[in-house]
Image 1: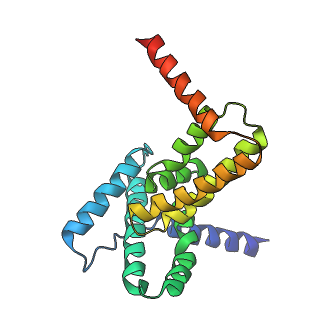
Image 2: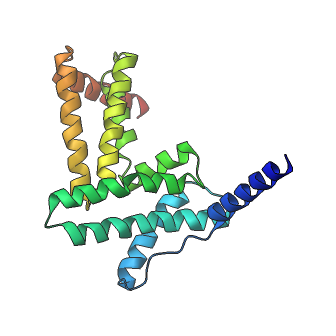
Length: 204
């Protein structure tokens, strides 16, 4: 019994050391101007999390910045071999959220993912709900699932154009799906614009 307790305590200690270890910024050998840009970009994402613990905040900042560095390194090394590129992106995709999970809640990790992809997922989802107020719950869930899937792919994209391209692809899929379910998107969009104008006029 006593031996089991010692083993448990030892494992807890190892886990504690792993979680509390300082995450180093992978900046050695990189252009200082590039590093500064990435750190500033990462800082803007971390700022929105309102983390009170400075130690956790620094680690989260470095995890995000290192993610940018990792994607850039993979792109530079495998850009001539698309299959190898995709394989490497997939191999390293899930470790990012796993690293963040040591310091952030699931909701905060979602916020980081949105920060990396310009907030397209929540903005687009909100737009669909406003454009088509009659959406059923299962339709709302399917739209959100597709947008989150697009976000996962966009997170690994090398630049903003590629990120937006993933969302464009999935929005096309969503629109086609909604049309097949009987929604007239042109009419829905027209009605939405009319509601926006009416609300604007009422507030003037």
